[in-house]
Image (cartoon, rainbow, N blue to C red; front, side):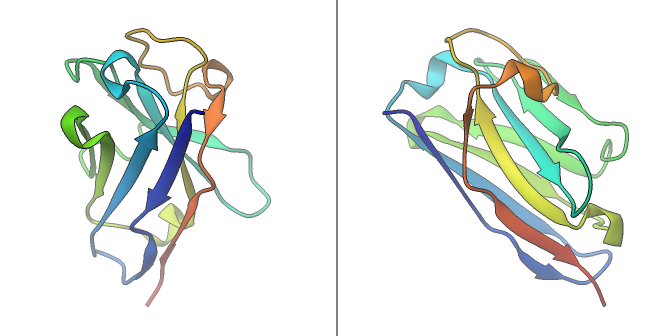
Length: 126
């Protein structure tokens, strides 16, 4: 059974950093692109970043470009989201997701993804 488990969220001051992890199991991560999404209260879930199966392709939402970096360690079956220069508007529950089928997909559209983790809360506040 394919599973994704996020961790690394927490409370951080504006300008601070966090690294989120997405631990995967039940499938061969090497063959899947993975996306990171976030959802703030009262707002729709939005795409943050994605990484292709080989790690060679990445994409970022305009709002996080230059501040967030996605990476993957297939040996550890984990995908990371390094978040720097955090802002209060980054406050949200962050989710990682995998598509239904293996492939090199890198998309920040939530409609491309089938499997979702339970999310980890990130709060940016002084």
